[in-house]
Picture (cartoon, rainbow, N blue to C red):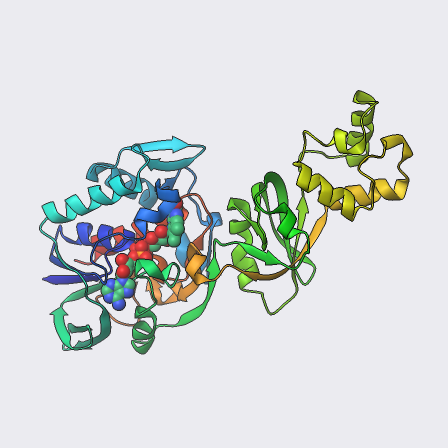
Length: 399
Ligand SMILES: Cc1cc2nc3c(=O)[nH]c(=O)nc-3n(C[C@H](O)[C@H](O)[C@H](O)COP(=O)(O)OP(=O)(O)OC[C@H]3O[C@@H](n4cnc5c(N)ncnc54)[C@H](O)[C@@H]3O)c2cc1C
């Protein structure tokens, strides 16, 4: 039996290794090397897994199907499988990395296994068409060449970070074979806003709670470090909200930032601070709490003289300060585009997939894995975990 895997990224590599246990395997890869996107993951450290994988960390058009993929058994089995290939883990706050802390070494381990197990890799081939005739797949690459196989695993990624090879080539091909393609949106990316002070706060990092609203309805909240940029906001907790923004950009999207997420009673906090620092101006009271640029923005927008003393503030000035420090509203005007989005929301419908084998319900012996599917996770290793788990299932059940 001959199996072809289209795409030598995270998912395709695991699918190929697992499939090799029962089949001759060939990987068709568009780039001149395997796992190009893997090298960029986790800022070059490769956050490939998480201690707390469950379906609440994902969005998909079929959470019901996802439930049968992200099972405890699959999570344990695939984690052990990666270990058996040679990946020695290191954990930090639930995030799991290779012990070396290097995406490069992670990729090397996978590549060495591919070579050792006699999997053939054909580089610099762009798959441009797939047909099925008499139980055989006929795959066209570079528009003119063809190759055939009995089983086909498609792990060609999405359209995010296209410089890594993920350019969505296989979406129309899978659509032609009868699969539904759900709309694509950038995810795990930054948010743009129309506030005039972003040029001033650019470069500041601070802890905050960020809440996202669509048409004034709260959709999701995240707490963590926020990076303030010259066009808006970024950082892990913003990334985790971005798919909601990108998929609702034709509606009214806003975020509300609470820069003091651990303070439950702002008025009391301010009063206590004024007691602790009776000689301090407002500026001095907040000097060690926020950067001076952020304080300037707060006092300016609250219409408070930064040199004023607490006892001279009116109730309405205190309310203004509370508003800008704990309830700063930003209208979201856009998100980072696909070139800067770590993953893609949307893709080939999970409803078209049998979750126990990753086989297509439309075409027998065709398996689809990884980010090309309509599944996206939050930051923390969940996207690579999904790519590995689905690759493993497809490779394991394709015999
Ligand atoms: C900057 C960045 C950082 C990230 N960090 C993390 C992280 O720390 N943790 C995490 O879990 N996730 C992270 N992700 C997301 C994660 O990398 C992806 O979800 C994952 O790589 C998807 O795996 P995949 O195999 O489905 O697709 P890909 O890794 O994109 O692999 C697809 C492969 O298919 C090939 N291909 C495409 N079209 C064709 C064609 N026509 N013919 C032949 N080959 C083709 C591509 O060249 C590519 O090699 C990050 C992503 C980015 C961009």
